[in-house]
Length: 436
Image (tube, rainbow, N blue to C red; front, side, top):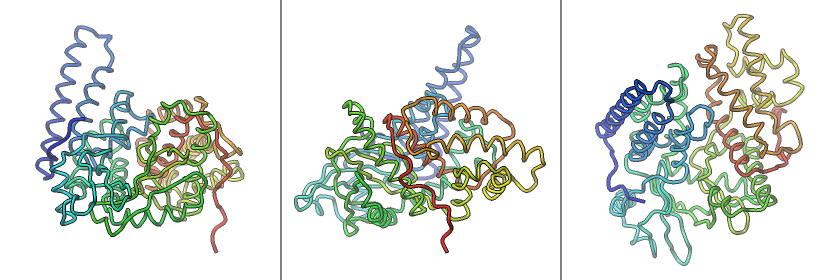
């Protein structure tokens, strides 16, 4: 893959990139409607393909929060045209890497030394380049290490980038202004945490220690003394990403084993730690030669406060979802039903959200669940498409915690579907008794 020799860092440079992309998209629309004059039956497939290509190219060169948005949207398969999902999915695995000289300069600026002065060997060619940083392989004292280096200017450009992304997101997502502002603010908070590599190292050590007894889940060792504000050093984990793993035609038994490890990893965190690895895209996991699930990134963590956790997960419990008044009370606590709603609105949102919760909870209400069945996902996507067209959902509803908790769980479901895994879903269940 061609390397990138520079990255726009200043607000002016990054703004210019967005403006240029906006012009390109405008040109794509002109081409589309010009052709449509001669062929009225022409659909928007080519237009979506051209726009997706131009937007992804721009975001991948900007990196940082701009590319992270593409990564997140690629996981929401029911809200974007297929061409956007296909193009943005590239950001889950690889983006154009920065060139060697730029990496050395970045390393020296943040660490005071070149990589060669610290490690026995350091490969200037990155093994993986994503939204916030890229990974290089190194060795020290006979150990193979992974060195994650943050792109220049990423942490400083988050707020301004998200303002620039807003018009694109507004058009793509079709959200109301208020809803989009809530979405952007929550994304900004998580991204600011994600660019704090010192925080990530602390969390990585804390979470890998808390989860160390889970079956078939492994973590790299982290090295705080070889890490800093923009650099993380950890053990290198050998293995394959999900897409590569599936190409090896693994047995159903092995796919179930990895799927079970993934389910346990997420539900242990949600229900025991009340904080969860909230970035479940396939690039953050490896399947090791020992047939374990390797977790290699704890940059994005979502904490779940009690006033969200209890009403949200109580809805999965049948005695609540089958009691209309208890369900409405939970919806009020979660701001899915608002204080000024009329009786008609209460009834409408009660029925709509109950349908959503019953869909979401299907894996939880039995002892095991077969994620290979397409009907479950067809129902999820159909529901998403249905409410996206309803004017009642154009206003913002639901507390901000839904943004990452929903993405976490639906991201988990999606990976399990790609694995075609059958998993035991009764291993780590919601804890609904409040702590004294």
